[in-house]
Length: 174
Image (cartoon, rainbow, N blue to C red; front, side, top):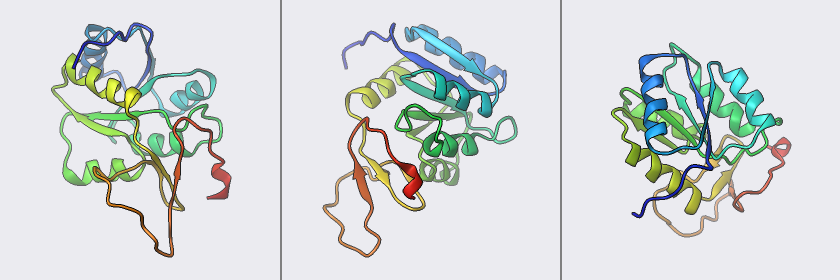
């Protein structure tokens, strides 16, 4: 993968000021991220997502420090958020399978575990920007397609709809 220029990228970093968060900020600086905006609380992060455009969001997935999963759900379904299809990455010191599945079910793009290298950050941001996954809209779910490979069309009673990339959704119908 060739190096990309992330000097124009704006990334929102959400979480309590901990050692892990400070390390994440340093890793993103090494990766060449142009602007890193910090929010300690999920509510403040949602305000920022409603006022400014960001290329991605990284939040600390530690429920003791911040209710990250509630933040992820609100970022996907919030009316005031400018881009509900923004790539949202959770990072954690360790992630059990059920933590990853829960985050995925709430619309998180990917879960990253420490140690996280600048190469990992840049590859995830590049993949999200150049090859975004289709978004699924359903009664209980709004987020990137959780399937890793295509399985063909589904013709059941509860058919979900796919949303085009980078479009504004009317989530009031759900």
